[in-house]
Length: 240
Image 1 (cartoon, rainbow, N blue to C red):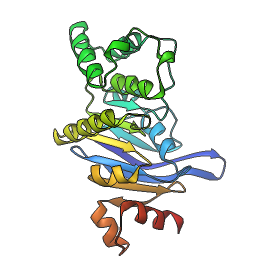
Image 2: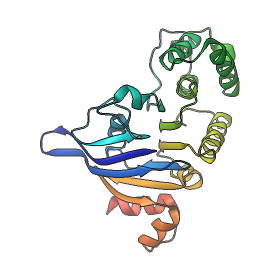
Image 3: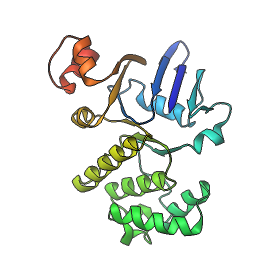
């Protein structure tokens, strides 16, 4: 479970990029975090994961504060950032072993898990090559594999399907469904509203740093007394 309590963040004095955000992401659900460019999505995700400091409020991961107990909180989630261009000089296997070391995964368990997950995403045969030689989609796959290696309870995914081929995108969506069905949490942002509509149990829409809606797609249609797709309703809400 992820609890965001009265969270605000400013980059420029007097202008809040995230303004008094309150949000609970429950165990057993896929939660989609939506908003136009510059709305505060990535800033929020970076505060959840401890990359950015929180100006006001607090964020709890399974009851652990990312502000006061950052190491304990970070052990409770796996994170896929919005860009996979990291650790480019490392070989794929070196990156995965680095992630396994951070999460204290035993040698025996990591070998089995690395083989399983990289074969699923069809990059097993590329693990001895440097990440800088990978295509964008392959870099995305290795980052996803690294995030899921420790089998974290909470998945935090920022645009996770960007660059993935159709099969890998399908596989990831099925993994997200299975993860939530087992009583765990998936929190992800996406610009592909059709995916969010089909995949999410609930969505939250942020605009200009403020949460303007949270609930199911049916509740969204009921609240705004509009019919149509999530994409059409999203445009209606964010352009008003």
